[in-house]
Image 1 (cartoon, one colour):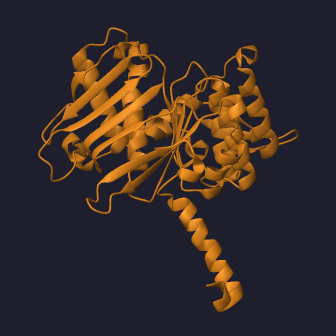
Image 2: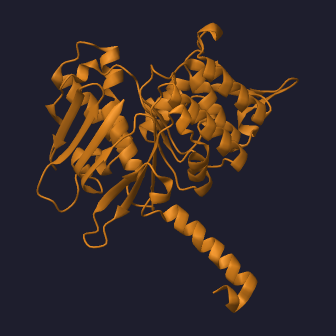
Length: 354
């Protein structure tokens, strides 16, 4: 699992350090405060798990080129130049550093004209063998068919999180007897709410089956398709608590109704109780509040809230972290909800509501 991330002179960040909970982390912040960039940076540095697993004897030069390619395909900078991800107007190099448990670390740097990242430190990094998962904002079940081959051949304008998730969902499902018990439970709950299950035939072909009919996945509600992505990742073992690397999820609430949001939080809490680290970004009050209401300290639940914000004096992005929902500050989600309630009162009561 990833325990710490430090970003210096990288994209919007001047100097930011964030420490992650081993269980659940929730990032909030206004648009432009770097939530998705932070998720992608952490995910990119976690890619060592996949690289070392596929090629244990990878050289330092090969690792530098592989991590460079990963960041370029995740961030898609202007002209596909690494230097375009360096913070504008600073003299120092860009630096990214991640610490992993137990006792693993990687630190990389680059400057404006760099063709490749330079690894400054890779202490025990080769021991990182757990592959991370990144679920992007948009669902992918509706365009999986042929996506991977088109992505490689024509360089589609999707960042690599979309190809990565398509590849994971196109894996064969693991044997039912090998499925983690809580994965079975989560898949059954998702199927119950959706009224059926998504079936994967390979090559990106996906349908939706009910008891007595089969439909195109495209005909299903987008919220169901997002839930179907999670179910499929559990079915293939891509998400396997205690085995898989961190699960990154950007705006899981997108197109989900409140009933699905509650189930989603219940599933994520259950996965975290069994060893799955989760790092997500959200703009949604309902999702944020469900974590506060459903977490159970008696089951050793732990949710760390990270609020990204711009310092009013320097305009630099900072982070404030807390385990107490009531102490999240600043909290633009809660503030917006409060403004909405106040406006409703004012509309109903006129001057008396002011």
